[in-house]
Amino acid sequence: MYKFREIPLTNNSISKIKPVYGFGVNDSKYKVTAKVDGKWVMCKIYRKWQGMLERCYSSKYHVKKPTYKDCVVCDEWLLFSNFKTWMEKQEWHDMELDKDLLGEGKLYSPENCIFIPQKINTLLQGGKSNKKSGLPAGVKASGSNYQARCSNGSGINIHIGNFKTKELASAAYTTFKKLRILNEAKKQPMQIRLAMENYVR
Image (tube, rainbow, N blue to C red; front, side, top):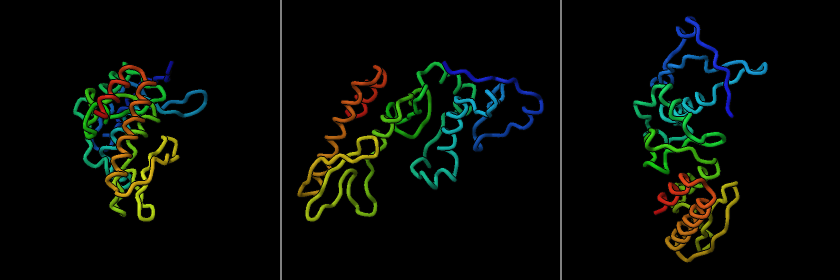
């Protein structure tokens, strides 16, 4: 069970609280960083909340991950205590916060978010078109043919096959990835399984 030493804030600590990435309000009644067993650690719930805000509102983060530029956090979750209340009701240990399975991938909210294993998150995020080559996701030119490949979720590409056109290769990749998602879904708790099955419909 997750435990964090919640040290009550002092008046001096409260005076130092600033907006998080310009939007988040840290209304925590305790210090979000504390010394545990002689080491300074950050509250894991706060870290999840802070990371979510960073992805949506940090210009430095957008340089590395421009796909997050249009993402936003719902008004309710801009208040840390609201996010904390929601998160404490979830199965979140060793999981990642996902907004794609239940939503359209742009809004972080109680209705759109779910905690999923990192492997599943990587599987869902993988597969983007190659801007330099102009080829669809999962497709690579191979001589006069086109090769379809899909990541196994651990950084290794699985060879699907060679095809005469990029359209055929893309179709093969899409079908293969859909089957991978459905197979992985069978191993997950019911809530995640149903979300993954709906995702590929």
